[in-house]
Image (cartoon, rainbow, N blue to C red; front, side, top):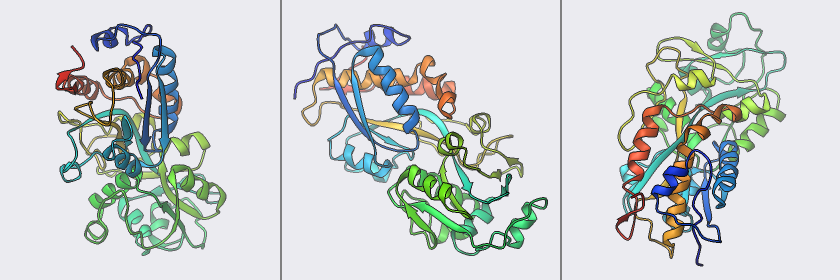
Length: 349
């Protein structure tokens, strides 16, 4: 299927799109992506903005990070969304992949406790709840963290993701840093054999269980808790500070970022940092000539990445409950896009 490139004609990214070499045509390009549900509200807003600015249509399926990566491996999408960066092992057998961070978010511990408006947690307690070692809301360790709260003598109804999920990776990456027992028994991954709890698909599925089930508890993307006003806990960070997740505390977690932008920022050692913060990425192949894709389609894909990194787009992250990328992440990503090619020739001239 032949697709045609329409360059950006308005907005902050006009010069960047011109650098991609577009010269204008009557038809637009259709791009497809799939993956993480964590950034879905931000992506829906941004892809609509890209369409309005460039005329290029983007369809995106929120099927979880694992599904998005599989679709990229199968070469049936233009890009994948993932809350977990690909490891060297995961990229074996794949063409070289470029990681483009798009925004920052967090995994929060949401709960449904009638009459409880504030809950404090620590990493070791969270791990033991998910290992089935703490089963009651009025467990002594929870009471010690919440001396001013009357916790009920009810079973904790645990919820977790059923699908391959970057949110699960972020959460279990954090647990592996704060609990040796968790690290040695379950480890970090997009899918984990949770010993207790109810499974649900996607962040919306887990959020739905918590919203509808009294005494439930689960990990979800921060934007779902913020937008749906589901109560969420404050969590002790590595400095012993009890931190409530917010755009400010999420941004505080950003530390040193490597050239390829693949990094974990969970359990960050920074004042005021919420400890389960993260980047989320769009993944594209460095060589864009695959699966019958045209040069125009490749140019539009790079143009979309540039658009997502633009100041005008990053400034809108907070409107849908995310945090903007630090300047360093944007600079590195724009450099990395210059390595993207079609038939070996750089797309950005």
